[in-house]
Length: 103
Image (cartoon, rainbow, N blue to C red; front, side, top):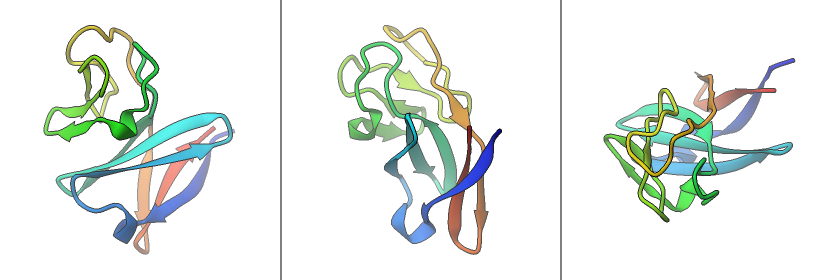
């Protein structure tokens, strides 16, 4: 059953930065892109690279290995070689704390 878990405060996730965290077996990436907070899977669906070491751009998060970029809202890769989307998670902010809905 999905539940909301507190991940970090807004102060810990500055604008245009990423914040990696683990929840049970899930490796998750929080991203603050232009003040909007997104949560996706953290491992590239192509080469299993950790996306928290990638590059955050207007287009999304770019894998550090083969440069596939994933849309942060949908998880869909924007270019090859990645073909499979990242899992995306619901996010809410309450009293300056960031929560992610996880299974």
